[in-house]
Image 1 (cartoon, rainbow, N blue to C red):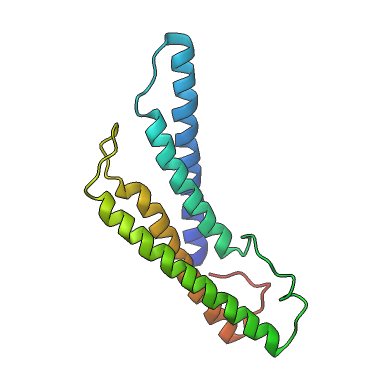
Image 2: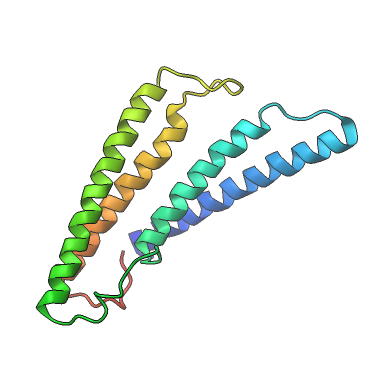
Length: 160
């Protein structure tokens, strides 16, 4: 099994764990409140944290598989050198957006190291780290896509 497939399966397993944790937290809290008039104090905070990581991991997987929303009305109709130019321009804009995402996320992680969540007493950096990891992984995937483009790999082939 290739390293890319192994990473993808690991990310999918993390998604399943996040989703399972959210279901247990929310559904368990509903059952406890309905039948016994009590609940888990940690439920809301933990489910919110798991949701942040679920979204970040999902967005990274979607980016790697080319399934993000995109506007390709022009680029699909253009062939040859203009198509290559537009593809590299789009990658440059994505790289710029990822730079700002990573930079802002890193600032939030640093600030969050000194702040704690009210119930679980976790550093708030744990939540902010989701977007930092997402941005870094997307940047690596963008470089891999550019490398594959330079090697002449066709669009139909899977990325590592």
